[in-house]
Length: 349
Image (cartoon, rainbow, N blue to C red; front, side, top):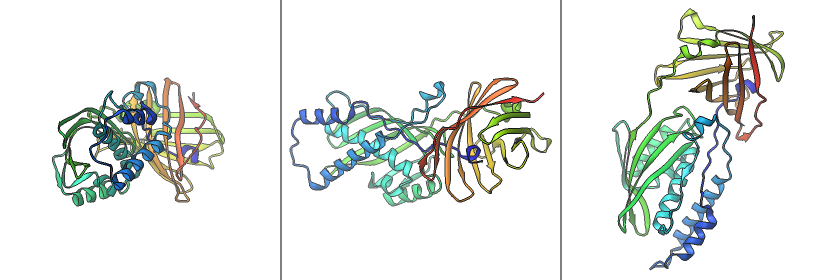
C-alpha cells in the first residue's frame, strides 16, 4: 500500500530570475573593490554560487492554482539594476539560509549570525550568542529535516557601509509547521569584510485556521474505486460515534489488503491532521489545507522497512457522490518517485 502511504513534498525551488550569468555580467561592470578579495572570501563566494546552482535545479511539484502564489517554494533574490556587491551577497545569503534550513543544518544557520548576535522568536523569546542559536536550531529541526522555507525580501537598505537593514516574510511550506507565516527584520553588520546577522526578530503572521473536521463530514459513507491493485473499497465513519475524528478504512475487494487513516483536529496546533497506518507496519502523518473544494494533504511516512517516504496528496470533491485523489511530489529514501494516477471514488448506493 505504498501508493496510499507515501506522503508530503521535501522539494525546495530557488528562483534566481536574473540568472547567474546576469549577476556575473553586472559584477564585471561594477567598480573595482578597494581591496583584493582574500582567498577565504573567494572560496565563500564560490560556495554560495554552487549552492545557488544546485538549488535552482530542483523542481517544484504542482499545486492547486490558487495555492501557487502563496506557496511558490522560492526565495526572492531578484538583483535590482545597479545593485552593489554587498546587496548581492546579502541576497545570496538568503538562498543559503533557506537551503540550510531545508537540510536541518543548525551549524550552517548559526554561522550566519555574529558571535554575539541575537535572535528574537515570534513568541518573544530572545536567544543571545551563536552557540545558543545553534542549540535552538539543533533542537527545533532535529526531527523536521526537509522543511521547505519560502523567503521573500521586501526591503534591503544600507544606512552605512557596514550596516544593512533587511525586511521580509517567511513561510514554512512543508513539514509539521507547514503554512506558518512570519514577518522578519534583520540587522546585518559588516566586520573584517564579512556580513553577519547581528540581530534578527520575527513576528508571527499566520492566520488562525478556520478548517473544521465538519468540513470533511461528506467523506462519511461507503466508497468504491479502481486502484493500482485493482478494485478497492473504502468506508469512512465518525470514530467512536463522536464528531471529533473521521476514520477511513481502505481495503482490496477480497479484504486482505487494507490501510487505515484517521483525520481530526490537532489540539496543539488547531489544524486538521491525519494519521496513516499500513498493514505491514508502516505509518505516517499529514497536515491538511483547504482550497475551495480541493484539500491538500502535506504528509510524510515511515515504510515497514524503515525507509522515509513523502508526498503531497490532493483530494478534490467533485459532487456529493464522487471525489478524486492523486499523489504528487513523492519521495522514498530521498529518491523522487513518479506521481500516482488520479483515481475517482464513487459513493455506493
